[in-house]
Length: 180
Image (cartoon, rainbow, N blue to C red; front, side, top):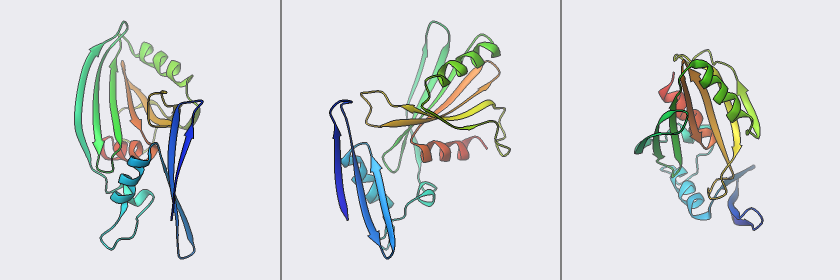
């Protein structure tokens, strides 16, 4: 097992990585800070002391509402809900209310111009809510953030722009539990 910490002084960001082998398998976990990474590694440990990684581990994560904000900008009103996960991550659910469906679609297109990568575009057949223009995209995290990148699922529904932001597996799991 190796625990590594990397500092990038130019971007004022650091990240950490834990790597280990078990039998013939090589495992690696990366995260924004060493402290959070070690908390996450501890949360992954099963009853027999082994570490459960990958999609199976995020299926056991719980989401607890921690904060709700309401506000208004020049163009729209919004409601934002923050959720903390049992493995020490954060997921943000946001709804922005525009004057028209066209204006919501324009804002979605504007946001996607800042994406570093578009991972998926289009409606998922198993999603039951009315989702127009659903996109899964990666964005560079703000400088003050511990994350290197944020994953966002964005979609419009009439005159509303919805988004779910956080780490990739948590965002996808949150959507799966709440929007299917």
